[in-house]
Amino acid sequence: MQILMLSSTFPYPPSRGGTQVRTFNLLQYLSRRHDVILGTVRSPDVTDAQIDALRGQVTELAVFETPGTVSTGISGKIRRFSQFLLSGTPPNVFSSYSQAMQNWADDLVTAGKCEAVTCEHSVNEIYVRPEWRQKLLTVANIHSSVWGTCREMLATGTSQNPLRDRLNLPLLARYETRYCAKFSRIVATTSTDKQQLLELLSPPRLRGKADFFEPTIDVIPNGVDLTEFPYRAIDPGGHTLIFAGAMNNLPNIDAARFLSLQILPKLQQRYPDASLSLVGASPVPEVLSLGKLPGIQVVGRVQRVAEYLHQAAVCVVPMRIGFGIKNKTLEAMAAGTPVVASDRGLEGLAVDGRTPPPIEALRANEVQEYVEAITSLFENHQLRQELSLNARSRIESQYTWDIIGRQYDRLFQF
Image (cartoon, rainbow, N blue to C red; front, side, top):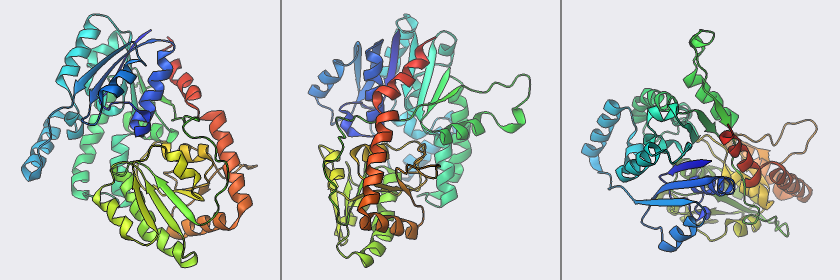
């Protein structure tokens, strides 16, 4: 099959994390079985060598320049919100939109050079014409619901701008409902996100009606490259913590601050030598300032996250916002670093509460719950080893990219 993949985020190298990891590994798997044509956008930090390396992974690669910069200031914000109100499309979708890439995709579809189109993240939905659904398989690999995420931030009090988000919420509901109608299949990463989408796309008042159409929503989680995240050789012990993730991402910024400002100080009352490494690219000033606090090191981008995971006694994933399965949780589990995480950090993973065990991670949501869970791991070598072995086993049996790639590939077998 000839598959057109659209990604406004350049998906190489996969060590960039987040969206890039999922897009690269799925396209790599599909390329073994199909002719994959990839359209993507080159950000300023992408090198020619990286473009050449990515070209070797696909049948055809088209790379477009980054769109122009977005205006800032009050007038710019007002203009973007007005555009959102009138067009129904959020500003962040327009900000990554390339007209040249649109023209290229239109030409391919018009010429009949592809049998399926995938959008590797919801922001790429803008490139898909509504009429394509009548002649092509159209797939939106959305990662998570934008409406659900906004609603969650308002409900949890973690919104940085509540007034803006309250205004945006109904607009995001309208937007997500509209764009999902363009696709044959919608892909989410967890059953929680699927339920959110069903709530939005198939409200109870419509169920049971003769003309009601419930969208096809598939749940396909993320995976882990086990060569990039090998199992640890030793348990380092001690009182060292790690939190890893892109440090310019709002949910990660919130988690890093929550861990540094509320959890770690209480833990240091018990263990004065307790330390925390914040590992991840592009730390914003709010994260960099945390490095001034006792016991906290802001590491920034590293070549191999696994090396830092192996050096930590416990990986903490204290996410309070952001839906979807978390790469950072899967990667820590693969590396064998015991995990303490929130409901959001463990979304999509049944790691505890089963009868009988095994337990693969500890769950915490409140500050004291984190302190007690981390303390239990600091104090109990056997518990650390149990979580480490069980978590690695789970990743090997359910969350390798080959396993996930097979699930994605089934969408194209029609």
